[in-house]
Amino acid sequence: GVFEVDHDAAVALYGATGGKPGVITIAGTGAISFGTDADGRRARADGWGRLMGDEGSGYDLALRTLRAAARCVDGRGPQTKLPERVFRTTGAADLDQLATWLYDSYRSPAEIAALARCALEAAERGDSVASVLVQESADRLAESPQAVIRQLWPTPAGVTVSYGGTLLVREGALQRLFCDAVRERMPAASVQPPLYGAAHGAALRALGKL
Image 1 (cartoon, one colour):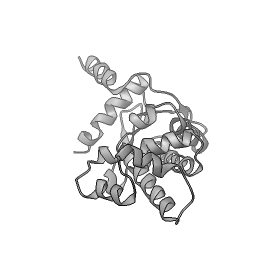
Image 2 (image 1 turned 90 degrees about the vertical axis):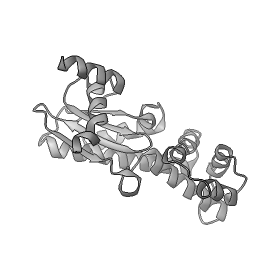
Image 3 (image 1 turned 135 degrees about the horizontal axis):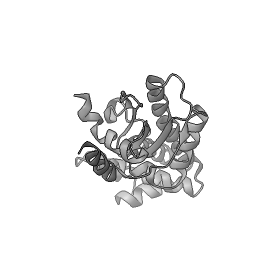
């Protein structure tokens, strides 16, 4: 049931807050926010997979990166360094080869999501198109903890919001912009880096159940 879907997120939350109530936003290939209040009630937002959700995830950012690269090369969109980064990462020489890389052999969601790094690195070097894409990811990711808080806390003063997953634990623009976006949406919440990772959270939880 729902518990199975939440399980990894519940363990990650336990690690991030040291077992205390709060909300965690996890962004890797996919994206989900999960929260537990002091009474043990649980809520989630997103985590609905790459077709229906996972907004702001690595997969989502990678798709927007690929589209921005194609728009730039075609002359439909603004100039950006994204095409050369994407070409270098995939080994493609042009858009035709990139399309072949994408469509002719099955690419796993994780392989596609890895292209998000092209946008993250370009944004950190001041590429304006990439910077907009990363800001969009941060805004989309920040919507989910806000939705979880609405479900669980009528007055969100002091609620801990933390983060996890390969995209958000990486120090840089996305992590910073996500924290800013959460503070902007929920000034009363307390945004905190994770105390421990998910593996540590699983161990803590197991000890707590003994």
